Each structure stands twice: as C-alpha cells, then as structure tokens.
Image 1: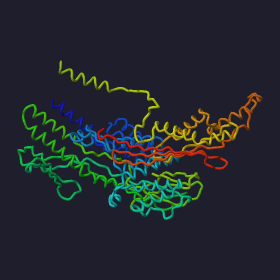
Image 2 (image 1 turned 60 degrees about the vertical axis):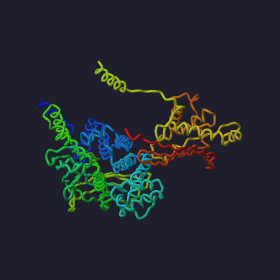
Image 3 (image 1 turned 90 degrees about the vertical axis):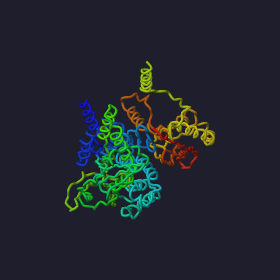
Image 4 (image 1 turned 135 degrees about the vertical axis):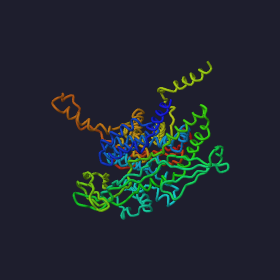
Length: 422
Length: 198
C-alpha cells in the first residue's frame, strides 16, 4: 500500500515537471545557434505535449523554425497556435478551472499574453516577407495592426510604455512604406514616437533605398517554480495567511473571508505553495554592430525591450496568481488538518489526498521562452546591388563575443530591404 | 443491476461521441461559421457582381456595336487583398469568370496559359509535327478589357465579440482608354460572439 502510494507520488511529480525545465535544453540549443538540434528536441516535446501545452510548444518551434530559415514550417506552426489562442481568448473552461484550483495552475490550457499574440503576428509577417510572399506579408501586417488596436487601445501612457510592442509598430510602418501608404506608416511611427522616439526615422520617404536590419538580443525572462512558506491562522470568521515573497519588502498578507470553517487545533498552521518566480536571464551580448560588405556600418539601436514587457505582464497578473495560490493553500490545509485528522479510513484517505495535492502543487511557469530579451534595429540608406550583411556582437566591456552568419541581399523589387539577423 | 446500468449508459454515450462524422453541405444553404470570410460569401459576391454586370448594359451595348461579338476580357492576376485574412482571392475572380463564360456574357483570354500555349506552338512548328495540321502562330487574341478588384475589411475584436465589415469592389476597365466600364461593390457586416464556456 505504502509502495503504491509512493509510486503514485513519484509519477505525479515526474508528470508535473515544469514547463521551464522541459524547455531548458531546447532553449540552450536555440541560444547556441544549434537550430537543427533544437528543432529535433522541440519535435519530441510537441509530439508528447498534453493538449494544454501543445500550442505553446508550437510557438516555440515556430520561432526556432523562423530563425533557421524554415519559413513555411514557421508559418504553419505559428498560425496553428495563433488560431487556437484566439479561439479560446475570453472563454473559460470549467474543467480547466477545477484542475487549476484543485491540482495546480499549469493543468489548464495555456492562454497566451497579449504581447505574445502581437509577437506571433510580427513573426508571421517576417516569415511571409522573408520567404518572398509580399501579399501574405501585407495581410499579416493588417492582422498585426488589428492586434495592436485590440490589445493596446485604452492603455494608459504608463501601461502602454510597459506593455506595448514597439517592434510590431515599426514592422507595420515599414510594410506600409513599402506599399507606398505613407499616411498609414506615419500613424504607426507616431505611436512609436511616444514609446521609442529614438528609432523613428527622421525622414519618411517610401522611394528611398534603405536597408532595415532587425536583431534579437538575450532571452526573455522565464518563470521558475519556487516554494513559498507561510503561516495560516484563524482570525474571527476569516483565515489570515502570511508569507514572504521573493523580491518584496516584508511579509505579504492575505485573507480568506468566510473560510473560518477550518477549525485549527493549534493557533495556526504552516503552509507551502508553489509560486512562479519571474527570473531575468543573464545577458552575454550587450551591443551589436552591423557590418555591411566587411565595413562596420554602425551600432544597432534598442527598439523593443521585451524583457520589460514580459515582466510588466507578469506583475499585472501577480494578484490573480496569488489569489489562486491562496485558494489551493486553503484547500490543502483543510484536507490535511481538518478532514485528515481522524484515525479512521476516511481520515487516512484525506491525509493521503492532502499529501498528493501538496506533491503535485506546481507553479505555472509557462510563457513563450524563445522570445528575446530585446529587439534592436539599424536603418541606413543603401543603393541597389548585392550586399553582405552580418553582425558583430560585443559584451559589456566591448569584447567581441560572437558574430551572426552573413546574409546576402540583392537588388529586389522593393526599395526597403528587410533583414532579420539572429 | 441498477448500479451497472448508469456506468454502461455513460460508456455508451462516450462511445457514441467518438469517431469522425462527415456530412455533405448543400452550397445553396451554406452559411458563415464565424465573422471571417467564408465559402458562403463567395457565392454572395458572385451573385451580386453577376446581376450588376447584367443590369449595367455595357456588355449588351458592346455586343450591339460589334455585330453580336462578345467582349474579350482578361482576369487581373489577383483580387487585391486588403483584409487581415489570407484569402485565395483568385477564386473569386475565377468564379465570376466561370459564370460570365457559361452565361455567354463575355469571352476570356487565359492569362495563365501563355507559357504552355507558346511551348505547344513552338513544338508544333518543329519537324516533329505535320505542319499542315499544326496550330498557327500569330492568332492570340488580345484582351480589350480587364476584370479586377479589391477586397477590404474593417475588423473590431473585443473580448468574445468579433465584428467584421467586408467590402468587395470590382471593375472592368478598357485597356486602350483606361475608362472604367463597369464597377460594383458587395458589402456585408457580421458579428460573431463566442460562448463564455468552452
């Protein structure tokens, strides 16, 4: 009996490996530029994924495929994921709700953050453009503008600075310029001017031959499951909990009004809960210099700090995350202290259930982890003819720590040549 | 016995829910599934455009002025897609072309057959073929008119609601003069609301 119980616990713990830990190898391979190996690993993750994580893994794979130049596959994966995320947007699954509350919050289907949905459209636009499908890219630009309107309308200036995606506005503006729609381009640059004024081009001329290079620096922050310890005590008709949250000043307090049905034999009980701690990743590359035909053309300018956007989204959701954690904590405590205190079979069963609930408690660490920490841009006048473009990457002390592969661009039909270097 | 009945019925119900279910849809009763462009819209656009072409009088005037000859037209490469959806816009043009040919409204030059026809003409002009029966070169017919158009949309999505306005504008212009001989638009607006529960 005891062996079966332990085996169940072990199985549940293994099955509940966090998203961040499952993605670790793929992320490392991707960051190391080993796209083929990263894709092999992601293929396996996609194949084995439960439905709740399936579409998020598709996003990860789509992003790696884009970096690897497999544009058609990237489009298929990103579109499939996008379709699902839009389908479930604003809806609630009762089954997911119960699983979230009773087991852990990663048991429900992943609902992507607004900035992630904007990035899906941005990458789809790039994928269509880079594979040479102009019309497809214009359609994606239209979708992107629609997403930006949907997710950023009504945001205060402060929230817009934190949650908007300047990269998306920039891309949309460039595509409008290419199409000769300068008025529409100006609207996007005006929005951009409020959040990233330093990258707005001083002259808007759709007939000017220009090279526009985007690159990604660093990794988006990831969430890790951290065990938080706290103390729960009865206070009149309510329960009051205290706990220390990493990175916050002093203990946090929460109240569960009306849950005083919990009879504590002691003045209080200790509890633990799994909390998704957002961790910013260490950056090696701090600066990037663009090299055109072997000559250093200039330093890439910061365009979009997605690390800050992801962190702002995390902080915005923190209240709801803690509320759910408080409910799960209450549930576990009730099962273990009240229902499981009897020595009869029912009491033992509740005790076991309490232990199982404690063992499977995991924080929801899901997020799009192959997103970068930052996107940078460089724009220069560039006449027709073939050019070889690459990047030189430097650390904080100015030491060269790497270089991108060289990309050849030739005289195409468009005056604006878009290059995406990773 | 009663204890067994409930689980058995549940299992039967679950089993009945499994498998793939396919049914044929009557295209004349086709309806949109959501606010996006659908096959039902394709029929609506074709019907709208065809009745407008018939009512316009330009074709009838051409036939009267050219001793019963129908005008020769060409399809634009594609309908300009200004929407936020990846739509096979060529399908709309081809559907209208099919109706115009089948209803005897106009003749069309095949814009996509040029390379194949040229290849055939070259082959038939070679010694491999009987030159007396070979297709002759210099008989291609130039189009006098081009059928083209634009499809655009304005969408507003908020929460579970998706509001989509769509507009398809088409015209026929004369190649020689650039004069627009016929134009029409078909527009519709749809609101689709998702259920709160999934």
